[in-house]
Length: 134
Image (tube, rainbow, N blue to C red; front, side):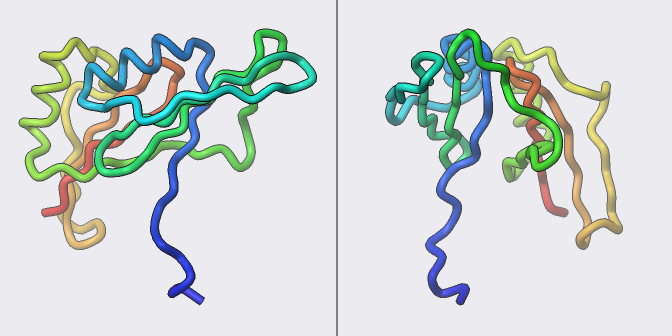
């Protein structure tokens, strides 16, 4: 059955402020691919596809009166492969990202054959992992 799958379509992220999320992802190297909106019974749901790290993020801003879903089934984070973790983190910090979740990267030589990573958060609390395989 795996031959039916073409690859990752997108990763959806709920946001409470679409423009803030777009600005954040553009600041760290993403670009808006498409914008749209879907009518719902409680108002307009804003949608934006952002190209980032070789895949698409779907930013979703529900109508003002609708709560952002969370909990079971939520995606805890997404990872972006990098060739040089230190260089990628430095570039993010230079771009103004101050939401790294730990003061230093984590090096795990025994995990999945060796890796190092560093997590930071986006404007809606989404966790983003910079991931370098060793």
